[in-house]
Amino acid sequence: MYSSYILLGILAFIVIAGVWEYIRHQKRIYSIPIRIHINGTRGKSSVTRLIGAGLRAGGISNITKVTGTFPRLILEDGTETAIYRKSGANIIEQLSIVRFASERKVQALVMECMALQPIYQTITEHKMIHSTIGVMTNVRLDHIDIMGHTLPEIAETMGRTIPRNEHLFSSENVIPDILSGIAKKRNTTAHFIDPETVSTEEMKGFRYIEHRENVSLALAICQHLGVDRKVALCGMYEATPDAGVLTKHRVDVAGKQVFFYNVFAANDPDSTLLIWQKIRKEAGMEGTRIILLNTRQDRLDRARQLADMVAGRIADEADFLVLMGQSGEVVESMVVGYGMPKKKIINLGYTEPENIFEAVLSITQKTSTIFAIGNMGGMGAATAEFFERKSTPL
Image (spheres, rainbow, N blue to C red):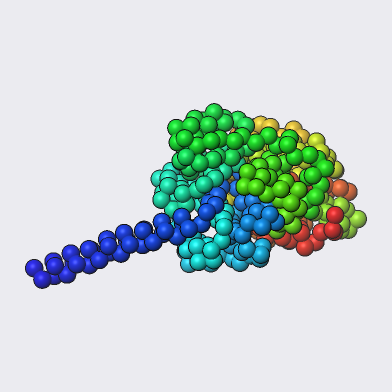
């Protein structure tokens, strides 16, 4: 009997402590006047960084939290610090970020959504962040095992982070009506931003390859908050890009020239295809065209999508498909099954960046263009860094 009372006492203490902490969190989050929650399939990290930089340039102090390729916390002066995780990513870490931002008494919190599971997306927005501005970059087929197997299903899942009685900004141009419908039900004003509002001349200010959709979306939010457009744009030019941002490097070695495009972070088929088309149209693809596909054993569903896209949409335009990473034999079988000629496929497996470099160099006659896709995880980041170290500044 006595032990039962002790157990009940412990349970009561845990419940009371939990309720008290919840109340304290609500007080903290509402002490931050501007709360921006960024969700979407592609471009979340870039848009998060651009918004934070634009607001800083406009004099709005903010803490920016990026999940991205590597989790980072960006302080009021733009300096960054890595976020250390004892285990895997967990939405609970958002609570400590809110506490930190509240203690700093900043005007704005710019937070990239890190939730995937539908219920966690609801909790993150409606229990943790309570955003005054919700952002949805776009809706693409990714994480289909968690969010849904169709675009409408994924839109409904990510739509859980749309706030109530506030504002939604989005660049979505495929199924905007679903996002608009969710916003309307929540009495939230939806703003769909046209990327053409940013000129080609304005895009030249970036020292890396940024997407017009990201810039126009971030600019619209900064202007909505009273930051002058030119001021915000100048701030964005100075922003540190995410590690997974689209970059181009040129490597000159042994009388050969290799152009390396790091597209690892665009790991859904639609975004990857759009970038392929963009590079082919605007920059051209010189010499031997090589698709470098990095795969992970825990992302085979994503590999299947990319294999289908490569075989069905761009195989005729590519000279080789080089496979690297885990489960290479499985992915090779997928690509061949989707119709890509086996003679075009080189399977390197899980290997070192030096071996990947030597392999692509061996199939380069004089010039080649490498289109690196799949995932920054596994060997992706190390391979991109290897090519960057060997590159000649462009």
